[in-house]
Amino acid sequence: MSVANGTLEPEAVRTMFDRIAPAYDRMNRLMTAGLDRRWRERTAQRVVRPGDRVLDAACGTGELALADLLAGAGQVVGIDFSEPMLERARQKSGAIEWVRGDLSRLPFPDAGFQAATVGFGLRNVLDLDGTLRELRRVLEPGGRLGVLELSRPRGLLAPFYRLWFDLIVPLAGKLLPGGSAYTYLPASVRRFQTSEELAGRIARAGFEQIGYRLFAGGIVALHTGVAR
Ligand SMILES: C[S@@+](CC[C@H](N)C(=O)[O-])C[C@H]1O[C@@H](n2cnc3c(N)ncnc32)[C@H](O)[C@@H]1O
Image (cartoon, rainbow, N blue to C red; front, side, top):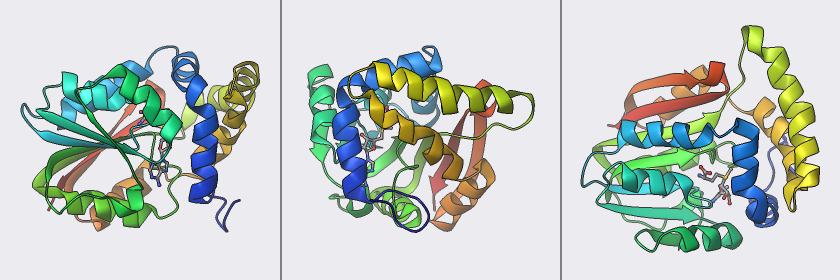
């Protein structure tokens, strides 16, 4: 089920999200006290220009793809490999093209998008560098990437964060249908890149003008870059 560095195999990740799907939106609202919507809005506003063709990778139930559309995208394509997550996305909008597929082998030609967003989707991929290179490939030169991801805060907030993610979130997960899979979340955050490491890997995948900003005291980071 898990490989050497503790990351789950893609099949196990997909099965986990298939199970989480019914509880996913409610768990997000609960875990972030409703801030998750605002973070997605800010991501979309940062990278989407009016009329852009935008890819939302790891679209899940479609929340960030919808934010991309509201930010002025001309066309949005959402891709995810979990059918139950996509079913929920389809119920939310018929204006977005929802595609079932794998991030590490995007079924799109080169340079077909002006912007790409990924919300809380890179933490689980097995081949992070390969996925970032795929995102670079489907963006035209000058295209913008926005990666919204959980991070590990330092300083005063760190002990509260540990309490929240290690105790409260798994407990809440046990009470909601499908939520038991949330016991996996704290470990996946601990294992993931620091903001500096992720910025370096985005640069190595072929992006420039890399920057990141932190939300909620560093619990969430938004990385941006421009395709070279
Ligand atoms: C935490 S959810 C994020 C959903 C959405 N982006 C959001 O902002 O709420 C992560 C999503 O990534 C998808 N995912 C993970 N690895 C993937 C892969 N290799 N290919 C396609 N989708 C993947 C999962 O199915 C899941 O729907």
